[in-house]
Amino acid sequence: MRGSHSSVFDSELYSSLFTHPEMKQVWSDENLIRCWLEFEMAVARVQAELDIIPAQAAEEIVATCQSLNVDWPRLAAETRSVGMAIKPLVDQITDVGTPLVKKYLHWGCTTQDLLDSALAMRMKQTLLLLRRQLIELGECLKTMAQEHKATVMVARTNSVDASATTWGLQVSSYLSELTRHIHRLDNLYPTAITGLFGGAVGNLASVGHDGIATRNNLMKLLGLSSPIGMMNASQDNVVQVVQFFALVHGTLCRIANDVETMGRPSFGEVREGEGGGGSSTMPHKTNPRASNMIQTLSRMGWMYASGATNLLDQQDVRAASMRVLNWTLLPESALSLSTSLDRACRLISHLVIDKQRMADNFNISKYFIMSESVSMRLADKIGRDQGYNIMKNLLKEADGTQDLQQLALNNAQIREFLTEEEIITACDPSSYLGCNDELIEETLAFFDATEKNLVG
View 1 (cartoon, rainbow, N blue to C red):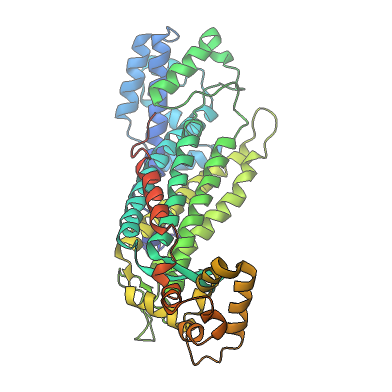
View 2 (view 1 turned 30 degrees about the vertical axis):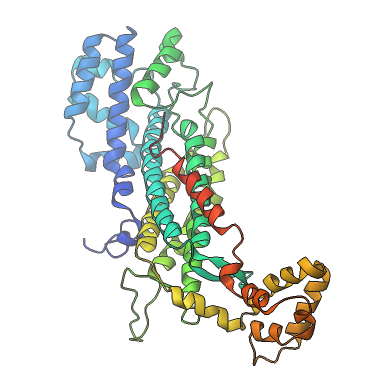
């Protein structure tokens, strides 16, 4: 029935705001079943190569899995009864299979082998997609940082005007974080895609002395990392990935927060340029919807991260109740991050920068935010402490009718040590940017040195 979905991830109204089409396909039921079938075909091939099952059995298992027409209503009904979908799927395969399929399908496997290996397969697809999106966003930030290397603006700390900076340097700080996230992804990738083949209690007893060879060859065929030792009760790899997602959300939320703040009419330095965001009652209003959604998705990501450690609540060889949480935690956390990355890339690509407004905003404080620049000029002549105190007293007595340059030029104590030209230069924001260009360039080099495609 139309309008019957209750989750924002499947809602006809809201799913486009919370899902990325490619990531949604990764975590679809269709792809889940495909991964399970791929596992059953791969394990049969490997076991046939090791003479654990007849080669003919492997061929027939592969043929049956490839031609299987899944009965979805039956699968759903039997899953409700069994609690897991593996046995119901295996039953459907054997029902249409040959005698050899009925005898050798799922040989030496347990439900968890398929669950965890299919999770690793989809984790691999997820991380490769996210990495591609991180690179894409990085390229957008790189372009903007280069374009606005000399776009001077007010730097703010603790929400208060602080000193002078450039929009290019601010953007490069986002890029630096993003590049570190790419490196984090590369480091966790090998363990994140670790599959499982251990049999009923993880000791490979069901396949005997060929157990390790079966496991290793199977993981190689599936393109996964082989586990080391017994990992049936271990979910640390999954938790690490969800916690990593939370770090990326932190960077995206920071970008969104800055765009939202700088886009307020009182600042007017940037503006979302995608369109939309209109108010239902105020014709003049355009809301920062991209920023708002990135902020929302970040909060969702942090909730998933805080809940992910529940997966570690295990005992004995394994426990089902906690690991079932990854059926919702991982898909939803992956969708939230992928959607946020897509939204952030569009936000940056369409962002409208008002250079003149950035320059004009120095007038809000009468250029008082250049006080450090002047005090450091004085410090060169009379020491930092004395120079600081002169400026502090000067600004304390200001009545708001003059800007910093006028105050300094009219102050006898300052004129004793600084020339008119020195004062004018010190009050010019473009003269107090320090190592702006070098900092931007080293950040761009850091990103450029990052492999654009995942190796290994």
